Amino acid sequence: MGIADHTDMPRVCTNGIEIEYETFGDPSADPLLLIMGLRAQMILWEEEFCRLLAGHGHHVIRFDNRDVGLSTRLEEAGVPRIRVMMEQVERGERPEAPYRLSDMGRDAVGLLDGLGIDAAHVVGASMGGMIGQTVAIEHPERVRTLTSIMSSTGHPGLPRAKPEAMAVLLTPPPRDREANIERAVEAARIIGSPGFPFDEERIRARAARTYDRAFYPKGLARQLAAILGSGSRRKALEALRTPTLVIHGDMDPLVPVEGGLDTAEAVPGAELLIIEGMGHDLPPEVWPRIADTIARHARKA
Picture 1 (cartoon, rainbow, N blue to C red):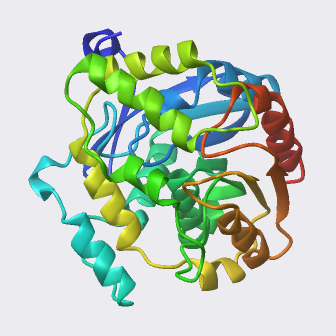
Picture 2: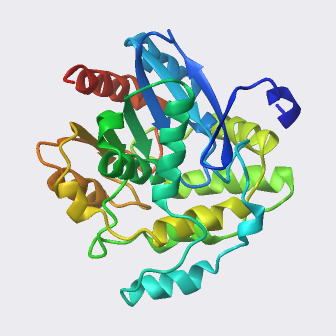
Picture 3: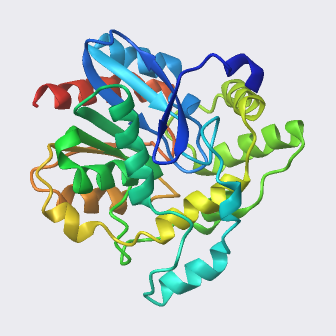
């Protein structure tokens, strides 16, 4: 599937950029916005999962964040020096970044504006959870419920990623297609879910689809800089009044489960679902359970 195949996909212009998006289900149904994580294209919210959510009575919207997939690439912003930024964070400093999570949150709000949606159920995974939290903090009237999956408050005292998981993030991906697919399989073995079957064929197919749709590794550094430059949301989350669901795997090597526990502890009245054996991915075996839990949470609103 090449980029040319997506020329008829819808886009919304907002916040000075173009956002590529796709929808599932009845447009008049309860809107649910899916926000993906670092370097992750919207197609990592896999179609079957999106259709499960739509089957619960939602108009499901998935989209490419800035600097990934087919949304605007901010080439002119340059490539940040991530290791320098990490050292600044270690010293308790707030590093400068080409943009922050607040900007990415405004992109999500602008997409809702473009679709004529006043407020949506917001579901974010990993960095997408951080963006979702930021939208709920800064634009609470736009978020009916929040679901934060395998994410964190950004509190500096939390346990860090395992070194091998962090290496998956910081090692530049190969440009060659086949080598890139091999790297994706290797990465999935490191950060995936040890409690569930490892489906290498599925992972290879997904990696090929992702590479063919939009290979753009330079966006990773700017997105990671947005996280590093945004600091902790812990205090702001303590004041949040949005109904919140936190989902996390107990075997996540990239964002340890303490990140989810801290999020649920910070937000008053938050619901917490810990999935045994889940790492930093969404294995198909858990899709029905996660979709059911999100739908039940949304009905509370």
